[in-house]
Amino acid sequence: MKKKIILLSRKTFPGSQSIEYLFKELYQEFQTLRLNVKAKQLPYYSKGLFNRIFNALYVLTYRNKIVHVTGDVHYAILGAWFSKRVLTIHDLSFLERTKGLKNAILKLFWVSLPVKFAHQITTVSESTKQDILKIIPNTAEKITVIPNFIDDIFKPTVRFFNSSNPRILHIGTAFNKNLDRLAEALSGIECTLIIMGALDQQQKTKLHANNIQYENKLNLSWDQLFQQYQQADLLAFVSTIEGFGMPIIEAQASGLPVITSNISAMPEVAADAALLVDPFDVDAIRKGIMTMINDDELRAILVKKGYQNAAQYRKENIAKQYVQLYDSLI
Image 1 (cartoon, rainbow, N blue to C red):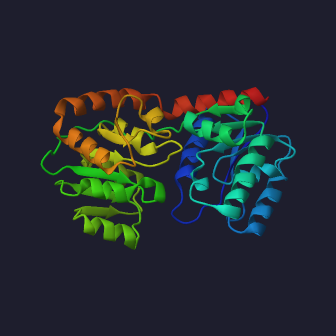
Image 2 (cartoon, rainbow, N blue to C red):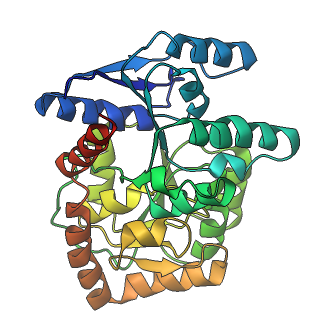
Image 3 (cartoon, one colour):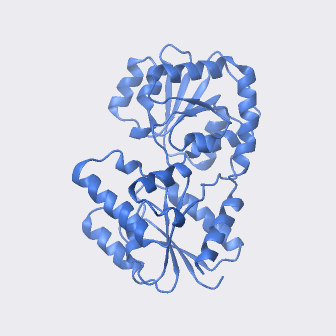
């Protein structure tokens, strides 16, 4: 492959690194495969009109290359006039939490125009692909599903399930992570909830109102994160919307039984290796957790299937799918 590939990411705000980490790791894998690839960062934070215009103008400087915009700065692809254009869209959850004019602007400059302008789109799940097609029909031929990969640090762990006071791991505190309903579902269940992410006062009030014993973990390294998976008894990932759902396969690769949602991308990612529940139904979440605590046989089956499911998300497999996509553009 002679044409140079530019992996273009956002300038990251402090504490916001997940997307960048994934493509940094892929970049290293691409180098192992001897691709002619460079990782670049946009010069300005994606905040405010002028910063975003300057970011798009910066992309104009790349000519006769493959420009791959990898983060949630979809509008930046509009500057790649003189190159082949690849855009990765992880999810459209930002449209769920906005309304009115802001929602219309995001839909135009983060979805409609970038999707039409890009030569190829990648999404991390079939669910996200279908979300895009609802907005921009007749673009299916340019959308390829290439899932996220799992870091090599997540490996099977010998564990003993604590059915009397299980440690329940919960990843994320954003609006879609559904912590309030999980807190209600856990009310009266003897357990310790391990929450990854910053809690606001409303969430703390909800946890205390339901007498939830919890631990709050922030700014963990990958080693520290894996330790939380090792020390947990099960993962409760009952989000209301996800473009992918990395904690599902991280838990499966670590030998942790998983409860997740029966909507969005989560059934697709979890396959038949998780207990699926309705994330909008507190009683359904509670029933699922009690079933997982009390059913030893079910847990063993899900853990075994989880190992098998997680294996397909290894980094080398995902990197090869991107290489095939780049080849198709040349």
